[in-house]
Length: 443
Image 1 (cartoon, rainbow, N blue to C red):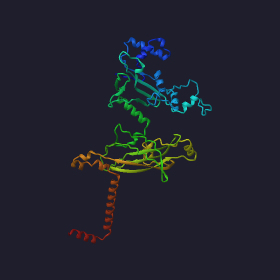
Image 2: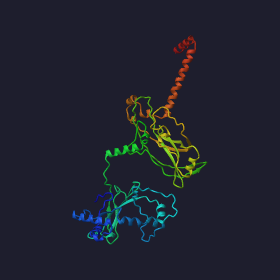
Image 3: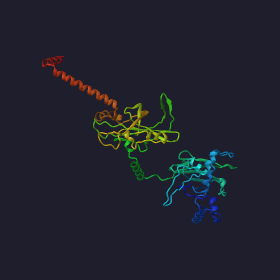
Image 4: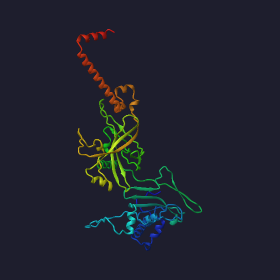
């Protein structure tokens, strides 16, 4: 068992035998390994003989990336694209301008070289690679290259994406490597993530930095509402091709999402009505030249009643005056965008009674349909009848706007009927009122 850090060099028996002799060192990296092996021998030698590594600067890494095969066949013939990709060195390039120099970019290259064409027609994201190897040779025969096997490959690209192949085993069981030969030995190994967990202070500091960088994100939840720490409050759907339905272009995303939120009633007054969460969405389009355009913004208020709901929200997008912006949008791509998604309704940073959007030009673009299955749970269902009388049910207090509107309409109709009855009583003579009253009282 060995704990290995990122780009940590562990020497194999073959490298120890090779770099012990200074005459075999040809490059500065070889001479560096020679010094490290001499220090290692003086300190007692290696503690692990089976597991070693190849870092990003080793020759094995370059050869492995050049000779990658699609199949396990020995007669595989690389295609034209594979040959072109093999000539690319996916490495992080340190392009630091010298002091006093000015970087110049040529917009048009009239005579592109072959290297220029290869590097500009293939997505060449800088990648750092590390191989964790295993020497699976018999005891007494360590150091033979034919017994070396790749146990795990770790890559980190320029965007910070870490790729581990094969994945961490955890509960999946051990990986198997079967050797060819007379004995046909079977090796089993596991790959675990031994990195230290992030401290709570560092996690809180990261969350504060995230809130400072994206101030509009916490405003998606209204006062009184909260969500679990692992809950994702934002996401991106897949790209979907549209089809013509009638006179419209329709796209069926069928993108499922799950959202769980909790509400805590802070104001115990009966007249307080909570504000329900809002879903903000943005529609983007991708053309043939991989250019994005904003097609529309919209919002949907989550239904207050449980059950299945189908909601269709209209969308709009910001526009500019003149035809230049539309020409730029059509030929170059890009369009005006909102910095704060909450501006679709009421901005989260707005504090006031009247919000003016005078001068903000928009254009109606289309609509997005949501199919929502809502489920509501409350501890009030488990309370006794005495507590229900003393404390109103959370669901009743949060009950849908339709129920509140119907209740308010009944109360208003009752008040109007009561006022009409009082006016009618005041317009009648006093003797008739007394006669009516006595007539009513006799039964």
